[in-house]
Image (tube, rainbow, N blue to C red; front, side, top):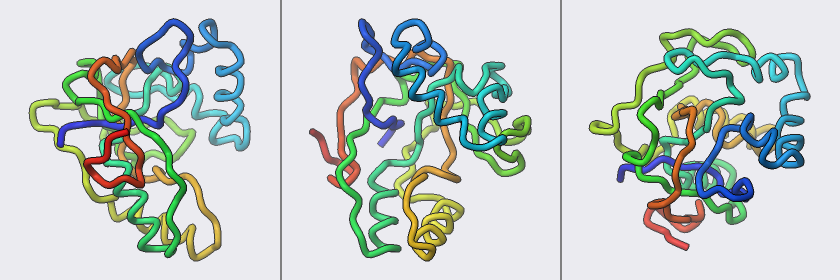
Length: 187
């Protein structure tokens, strides 16, 4: 499988692609306001908005976030750990060959949220060698275990690497899946 994933949300009016948050400022001001407000809860997240992503020299809000790990892997890990299934959530499954050529893989290992990103945590995406991750990484699994043990849930993709691009990311060849439908599910 050679796809990347993004939670399916309404597209900006008049578009057929995923756009960075900053593009919504003029295209869909109410959507922009809702999304940017999510960065106001802690000092680290407020600084995160302006954090520059090495190799593409774009701020955090100027990139599109894609997951290289199949969403079903997260759904399955949570069910194994907590004994509870998550409700259905739809995702765009996008062929990696449709991702713009500026894309990078960001795997936060040295950088703390809100601090400058260590260039060693970022690498160019190579579509020729890319394969979809079918398991959550150990750090994410540990995060999910801690959430479940504390009786909390959420932030499912914390400590999973991300594919970042300035976009837009076309959805022409994308398919819609639900994370609870398994690895081949199609809606």
